[in-house]
Length: 349
Ligand code: ASP
Image (cartoon, rainbow, N blue to C red; front, side, top):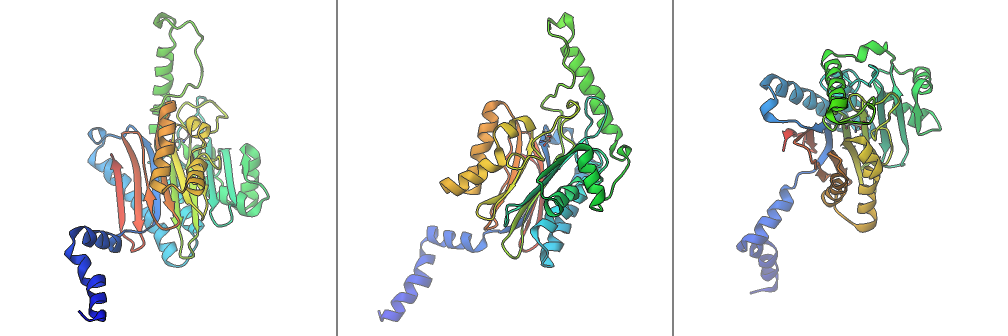
């Protein structure tokens, strides 16, 4: 065989004669690259207890969030713009435990937390315990871009947001009947558990949180045309949380992290465990120091959370557009959009 023909045979024809090589080549060519992933919270989300209308409403809201993010990315905007826009859609929807529709604290208030991080510069911003900022994710971004700080809390964060031109609302804007009823039920369940005739000698603890008292925190990770990653998370926290309690969502390194060298990460779940496991940064560190893939790193850290007794999920997107979305609950509202604009929404396991 002439030399040229031999080369042609080995590069172009020979691989197709071996099914294994053929399918590997084909798989590589067809590999989906994602530009954005989002979540709308993890928990006991079962198909058996979900109505068709509710499923449709969640699917539509998640789709809209991805569409908004994708439109911005396609127009050449940054991953930060896409993350903020997608999260604002979910904050404005009463279906999710973020912005309008946030859960209630033990004393019947809505205290909201959010954070955002720029994977290119490692700049970050967060607000915690805000009660009058319509879109906490935008306030978190303002902290990152317009202050010298990373995290601001309570009335000070609100004053700062107002001065930064962020839309403010009356605290009653966040209230929904469904979340109010969830609080009443959580309080009832706690008082039953703490009744003296149940053998409990300890006095009742106010604001006890139970693992099913959280649903619908939202988060997004995006990768833009310049190869920059960004991640953000927004939540009302956990139903019946004690006044002043702050979860993982606004804690950089716990609920949110982004680093162009590794991945963008947003978490949802029982925040106390996510803080103790420093989940988001641990994932990035495993990728950076140990060379783990985004799938391996997210699963490794979620396993640590599970071992301690925590539950929830994680979404992550690496610098090459590989996504991972593991969770250890029955379901997690989640969605992806590929570089071609193909949107996929998933809810159950
Ligand atoms: N991680 C949130 C928190 O603990 C709750 C959630 O994700 O559902 O505040």
